[in-house]
Image (cartoon, rainbow, N blue to C red; front, side, top):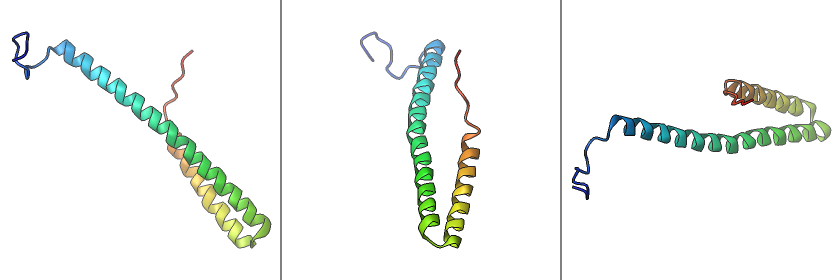
Amino acid sequence: MNSTGDAILAEPRASDNAASRRRERTRICHRLRADRIGRLGMDFTALFLAITIAMLVAWRGPRPVAIGLFAVILIACVATLLHHATDRLTLSF
């Protein structure tokens, strides 16, 4: 029993429960959005570095290796595009 005389494990009111669930969902969405933004930058940074390496190989290295690297990077770019193409845009006007 707590100081108000109610049982500690008593079922909360429906309106309190709905508001609590809404707050929890909002907190989870904000946490996931911040996590996704952090990872998003690293995905594109890795692709940019891979393209830079492929250009250096094309400039100094053998042609078949450069073409192979370009093909792998192109597939990774298409996969990244398809992965992020389904993201919902949060626009507010």
